[in-house]
Structures are given as C-alpha cells and as structure tokens.
Length: 470
Image (cartoon, rainbow, N blue to C red; front, side):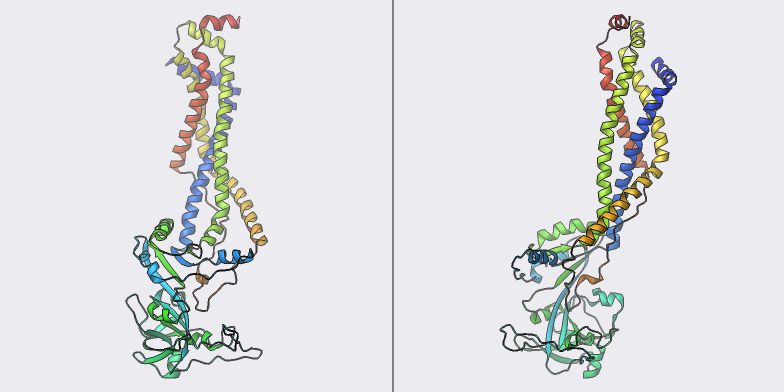
C-alpha cells in the first residue's frame, strides 16, 4: 500500500496545486449540488401547485383558440354539440373519483310566473333581435341549469345556495324533476311534490316538472347587471341533465368536470380520456386549469432548465480542467515516475497513486460542498427566480387578455377555479439522494479525468524517462 502513503505525502508536499484542485472540485460539487437541489425543488413545487389548483379536469369549449382565430381574421365556425354519449366512458376511468355535468339552457313560463326584475333608475330594456331580423325574439323567463349533482356546483359548495326543503339532484335522478328557489316557490305557492310547466322557446312545447327540492340563494333580487327576469337569481331552476337537453339550442352539454382520486393523475387521465371519448379537439379541450398551472410553474421551470444546463457544462468543463491539471502534474513528475519504475514499481500502482491523490482531495471538497451547498443553492435560486418572476410579469403586462370577457349566463364559467400566482420562492434542500447522485457524478468525473492523462504513463520506460530528464 506504499502508493497510498506516497499519495498522502505528495498532497502535503504540493500544497499549492492541491489547494487549486480542491477549489476546482469544490466549485464542481457545489454547482452540481445546486442543479440537483433546484430539480428537486421544482418537482416539489409542481406537486404543490397541482394540489393547490385541485384535481379537477374540465372538458369545455377551447375559448382561447376561438378568440385567437377571430383575432387572426378567421371566420369562426359553429362548434359541434358536446353529446353525453360521446363522453359516457370517461366517468368510468380509474383516475376519476367523481364527475359533474353542466347544461346551460332557458325556458319560458306556462302556468307559473317568474320573479319580476326590479328596474332601477338608468336601467335600459334589452331587446333581443330575432334570427330573421323581423322583430324581437322570444325572451326566456327562467334560466335552467342541468346537472347530475347539485352538491358539486360551486354555489352549493360555497354555501351561497343551500337546500331547505326536499332533496338536491344526484346521479340517480332522471326525468323532469326540478329544484327551485324559495322566493319563486313562495310566490307561486309551490312545495315539494307539486308540479308546474315550462315551455321550450323553439317549439313552444310545454313540459311538466315535479318539484324535487327547494333551495335558498343569498343573492338579492335586482343584483344582476341587466334588468331581465330570467337572470334573476330566484328564477334559476336546477334540473337533471336529460331534462335540460331539450331546452338547449343543439342538445349540447356546456361542460363536464371530473375530479381525480389524486391530482398527480391528471396527465394520465387526459391521455386516457382523449382515447375513450369522441370530441372534436379543434373546439374542445381537457382543461386542468392549465393556464394557472403554467403561470405558477413557468419561472421555476425556467430556473430548473438553466440549472440543468449548468450541471452539464460544469461536469464537462470541470472534467477537462481537472484532466489538464493531472496531465501537467504527470509531466512535472516524470523523474519521480522514472525512479519508481526503475525500482520495479508497477505502472498500475503509479496510476493508482495519482487516482488516490485526486480522490482524497475530491472527498474533502465533497464534504465541504455538502455543508455549504444548501445556502449557496438557496441564494442562487432566489436570485434567478426573482428575475424570472419579474420577466413573467412584464410579459403578461404586454400581452392582451384574450378570452377574458367570455362567460355564460348559467354560471358554468370557471370563475370559481383557483387562480395561479407565479411561484416566487422555493426551499432548496440537499437530500441524501442528492448526495449520492452528486458523489457518483463527481467520482465518475475524477476517474475519467485522471485515467485519460495517465495513459501517458503506460507507454513510458524508465530508461527513456531518466535520459530525457538528463
């Protein structure tokens, strides 16, 4: 084991070069540590962002694409209807914990009067032109929301609406059932089990409904922007999906929302749903609040991408510099090698000596880097992330908010979805796994960078080395 003892003596005798190599390996380990730590932080941030935004995926019209087509001067095409039979298999996917269908529709009165809208000073009447341009079209009296589960609707979740009599709608409820607002029920003296009729606007066909439940809404009469009866909160009626379809223009669902058993399954669900459903991808999209997720993750993902580049460049550049230092060291120590070889020393042990020297210095550098990399990585990440967040904000200010004005009368717009704010801080930590991976990369770089220059030793003969030295 003399070559190990000689390696220790050489390190101590050549303090300057040993210190220079220590600095190089310390910087190499620190940068690689920072890169791996940022990658780990990005993965944790992605998981937390998905949890914050919730595990819901909604199939609805791709309004962003439609708005961009209109801005580009393209003639908008009529979207094909979203039929229930086209997505029937999606609810049975293993990733789905629950699902929510919504249908926006409207109806006219037959035997029961709607709550009248209270007009205020300055309010103007709204006239709806008919399709043929001759006169005014029929104004609906009620707003219908078709659903398979009232408890899953945002207003019921938040408590702004709640059942006070009878029952809400569930997946088991089919046919002409209705959940009506208490003010409308009181005005028309309706209770659970009573019947009333609504009329389709296109055919004037009256359809009878049975009161299944009564709910209250904390939205006051006259709180709507325009004084129209059917937009009054008290005139909103919840019915099963199959009962709402006849009152729509083309028999289309407005949206279908699926709640995942785990938010991390969203990507897998999207792929599976695209395969089992039959929807026009030019008009509809599977949206997991992707815009908010992109807004949250873009800065940290940019930092992570840059960190990955730094890791690769550092490993390559560090390896080359280290190989150069080893090569220079070998050339300066030709006389030492010649003497050892003439005394019968094995060439493999000579190579082992150089390898042990670099590995011992590398172990010291790695130990120091394990202690200092966390604060260094945190400081570097904070600085880079702050720049990326500011850049993202500047880009958002310069972009036009296309699609911001899109909404629906039925309240099925995704205004209740969590809003994403760009992630502007992360906790950088060095895990045991990071230490193992960085240690492995460092050892690989050291071995390659040391062995390549040591190939110079294999072809040397003692007599040639000593004669050249003379």
